[in-house]
Each structure stands twice: as C-alpha cells, then as structure tokens.
Amino acid sequence: MAVYHAWLPLYAIATAFRVAGVSNAEARLGPPAHHASLADLAYRTAVPRVPSLLFSAVLVVAAWALGRAVHGPAVAAGLALAAATSNFFVYAGRQARCYSAALAFDAVCGLAIWHAWRRGRLRDHALAGLSIGVLFHAHSVSAVAMTAVYVACVPLGFRQPRLWLRMTTACVTAAALIVPWAIWSGLLTQAVRQPPARDYLDAAMVLWSLPTTDPVAIATFLAGMAWFTAAYAGLGVPESWRRPFSSRPQRSTSLPAGSCCRTWYS
Image (cartoon, rainbow, N blue to C red; front, side, top):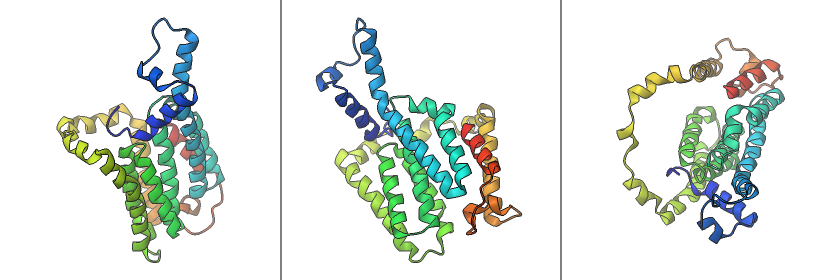
C-alpha cells in the first residue's frame, strides 16, 4: 500500500481477522494454499471486507446529515441514496482497502466543517479539528484536502466572535492527533526519503487528459463552481438555492435534491 494509506484501515482489517478467529500465525502465512476449500477461500475473502462495509454505513449516515444541514430533508435523502447505491461508492465499499474509510471520514469532515462555519461554536471548530485528525489516520492526502476546505471557508466566519480562538482550537485539536503519532512512528523521517512526486508527473498530459477521460465530472465541477460564485455573490440566484449563504429558512424542493443526486452519481 502507498505511504498515504494510513494505519487505521489496516488495523480495522486486522481486527476483523482477529474477531473472525484468524490468528497472527495464520495471518503471517498469507492467503490459504491453492488446495484450500472454496468455503475457506470465501471466508478469508469476506472477513477483511467487513470494516469497509461498516465505514460505508458511516458514509451514508454522514452524507444524509450533511445534506440535511446544508439544504434540507430532500437533499439529505438524495445524498444518502447516492452514497448507498452509486457505482463508485459501492465499488469502494466492497474493497479491503483504505478508500471506504477515507470516504466515510471525508463526509464526517465535511459535516463538521459546515457546522464550524455556520453555527460557529467553539466546540464545532474543535470537532472539525478532531475529524481532520482522525481522517489523517485513514488517508493523509484526504486530510490535507479537507484542511484546505476548512481554510477556504474562513470568509464565511468573519463575523464569528474571537475567530482566532476558534481556528486555534481546531488546529490544536488536529495537531494533537497527528504530530505525536508522526514523531513516534518516524513518519517525518520517512517522508524526507520519499522522492518528490512532481518528478514523476507530466502536468501537461494530466491537464489535457481530464476533458477527455471524464467530461461529465468536469462539467459538473464547472457548474458547481458557477453556482457557488453566483450564490455567494447573490447574483439573481433564488433564495432556496442560496440557503448555504443565507440565514433565512429553507423550503425543501425536489430540484436541488435531484441536482445533488446527479452530481454524486457522476
């Protein structure tokens, strides 16, 4: 596994094996021999996937809560349905890898960050830092991305009292979960030995390939950014669509729910 695949999903798989009765000695022998029974092979295949199924359940609940917090019950149902049934999330949720845990904690982070900048309570920012810290132990690259999301949302909280204290609380909480482990595990030393990824990337090839490899995703991203800019600036966007940036109550409609479903499915 790559260096950004952190210990939490791996130990979840190890715990599943231990609960299922597979000892350390048996695990060190690797997969069952080719002459093992089909039942034994199926058992060894199913057990490590149990944690991914549990993380997928967390994803569905977190997606529902995030949709309800941002735009109401209609979007909550749409996001939960998309998280539970779309091909990508089902594909990730059945693998004995890190992706199911990363997606689950990404959704939890999104919910915590939303509450931090919309409700603005000190404990909301502490929970945002806590969720980022936990996400780091599931997928470090995702933790960096969600940290960037938290910072990008700062303009939404300029009116919060003692903003510096709230952001400091989030940073300290996340650092308390990350820095001691990074020092103890030798992560910082190992990171120095890793060659820079930029030496292996062809930026021109990546950028030019995006429109052809997944044009639906690109179109969805551009439409989302256009909506975000128009809603934030209030450029003739209906009140029901500007709810994330407005303090007025939301009247649930099916149109935003359908849009969110299409976005997640794509």
